[in-house]
Length: 205
Image (cartoon, rainbow, N blue to C red; front, side):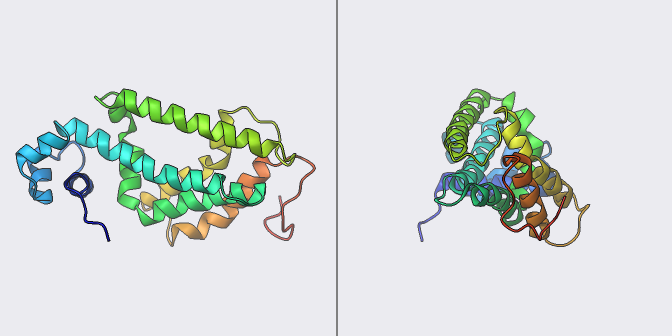
């Protein structure tokens, strides 16, 4: 197993501190103490607390973006790919609840911070890639024509709302208990009108 880098150890410690104390209450000294890094090392890698917040956010969206991209680009049917995006998203949140809470709560702060432009560039690249994948999937004829901005809202929007409720403790049980009906709903929302689900015995509208 590869040894954790100093930069990764600082981000891991920052996430722990943000989870334990809240982002606003966490100081640079708290992160330094939790990570075991010297103040010089911390500033060398990040510069200041705001850049740590931004770097942690960007690393989080990179990691769950890999899950979603992998699901969308897998060699399977269109229905399976759409379902895999929902299942992959909920699986990532279930495995990384602290990181998911941080991502939900910190976007505005990162957008307004020193890494805001980098975040915009990453988001634009992600949207461009997903648009290309979606256009390729539409050539199979089993998807309806949908404006590009609506695609993520239809496929992962409901899953995000369930994830937020679960992370806030308003839903009991395992997050993945909700995955199958959400995956079914996502597919029904984007499939062509004359295409049926692979198993019509489930979740009839």
